[in-house]
Image 1 (tube, rainbow, N blue to C red):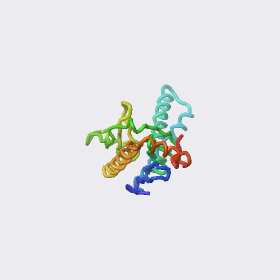
Image 2: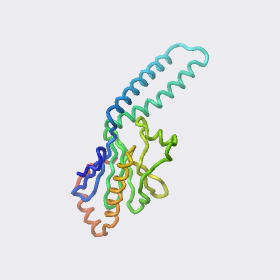
Image 3: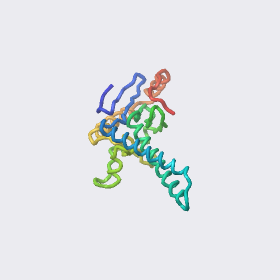
Image 4: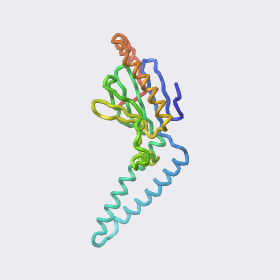
Length: 207
């Protein structure tokens, strides 16, 4: 196993494929702040729900219902971000045929498959410095801010949640090197790899 950074590791498997794991971890003080925010936000929601069960006059009920729906939306987003920061990972698997990407929270997630021959312009994804979008995407309470991008069949794909510039640069280089090697594999080598892969169990679970 090769450790690219504290969050990123790369493993070359006997079956001839390569996997990367990107941990969703953040510094302890940020995780504590996120947990405290989630706790306080949950208490607010409990109060809103309690108030909904009480008698109301005029438009008070609709106001409280709207407020509760607003709370529920951000409760879900903050809760998902918190769980990802504790138990979440990004998986990347590269074989001679395809690249597979999966964002996993406690082992649950959907795998997305991309044929290598259709992957183009792999590089770093950066928003304009000082823009509101960049500030928001780099916030640790948001599950976003992917730093790696590539074009696939006319669409932009992104991965690498809130990596540092140094991590992004190292990961792009490693991915680019692996993609070049696999794309150059001959048809004979590809058939040999398929035969070998049939006997090798992948440690990247695909839904």
